[in-house]
Image (cartoon, rainbow, N blue to C red):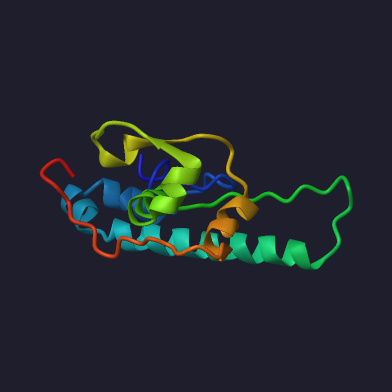
Length: 140
């Protein structure tokens, strides 16, 4: 389950054998810093995706070229953070449902969101509303 959600990788299903030994010891498994590992994998994947996207804009594309990427790790957590912190993104790209448990199930995308559309939110001239501190309520 960890490799399907926290450390998801569309390009590979290779699992380091050290994680199997952790699975044999519940105390070690629970003590392992899965969040740190997931963050490192996610951050590296996002940096690579952005760099690939920017480099594709720097070179001329042939008409049959398609720019695509997949993001390993747990990018969904960053998506939920963006939805909570940047109301402009919510208004433009999502529909929020009643509070769901887990909380990250509260939104659905309204359409396939393109990189340039998201970037336009950050480059637009109008003032941006950002919620800096997120306070959990009883259900979050």
